[in-house]
Amino acid sequence: MAKIGDLLRAGRTFSFEFFPPKTDEEQRVLVQTLRDLEPLDPSFVSVTYRGGRSSRERTTSLVAGLAQTTSLTPMAHLICVAHTRLELAEILVDFRKAGLENVLALGGDPPTDPDSADGELRHAIDLVELARAVGGYSIGVAAHPEGHPRSASRAEDRDRLAEKLRLADFAITQFFFRVEDYLGLLDDLEARGVDKPVIPGIMPITNLRSVGRMAEMSGCEVPGEVVARIEAAGSDPADTWRAGVEVATELCEKLLAEGAPGLHFYTLNRSTATREIYASLGLSA
Ligand code: FAD
Image (cartoon, rainbow, N blue to C red):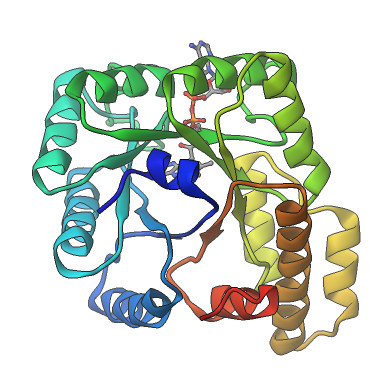
């Protein structure tokens, strides 16, 4: 087990993100994916979090299981939405008891269920403060290269990001496709006196429509030139896949050449695209 802040100080990190399975079939796929990806020796793996009770238990049991039964260093995501301060403190204490030393402190999205409570903490920065008070954590936060969709302006979002990153240890970005958006975010942070590591989040396009939907929800854009390149590759899903992996590989190469402190892969619980990008980058053992 290691703290991600320490890993980043020691060198580049390569990490994978998973979501907790809801069904036996999803569980089977995830176990296979973990088997396939463990040999790549990731610096850490992260597990997403949704607010409901059963979903909360799924995240906790997956991160605790990873900590106790694999050689991987897990990080739990945690969100402010739909929790009281006391509940969040309890969850943070429980994560520590399960051996976790890393947490990604997130605002979360407003609940769609009208019966769901709003949550006592309003913003991710409040959760960073709470995790610091609990103690023993290396703390990450989310960054949005193209600005967060609920922000009045990109400049205001950068101000908020700078505030929370001053208290946290590192950030991981929302996925994006233009290296300039990532470099612009770093410039804006530097102008605000913040130089904490910001790990770019990578989403390989293996299905144009579903990535388009996720991009829309996250306030980012799949640029026209990327869409055109993937469409030009052919209409067969295998063509989309090959072009999507090529686009992601090129983005990773540019980011590494620009000195990115690591790469964080949104795996969607599948291993093949990540393994192919790893191999193209020459990172496979
Ligand atoms: P915040 O930092 O709270 O920001 C949200 C908005 O409020 C922004 O517009 C910001 O500018 C503004 N703001 C921030 N602080 C203040 C303040 N003090 N006053 C006024 N305005 C402020 N979601 C999940 O539900 N589960 C997950 O596991 C998950 N994992 C993620 C992992 C990564 C790497 C990323 C990038 C996102 C993830 N998300 C996840 C999505 C995330 O919860 C949403 O993007 C959410 O809308 C914003 O989260 P945040 O942590 O950036 O929030």
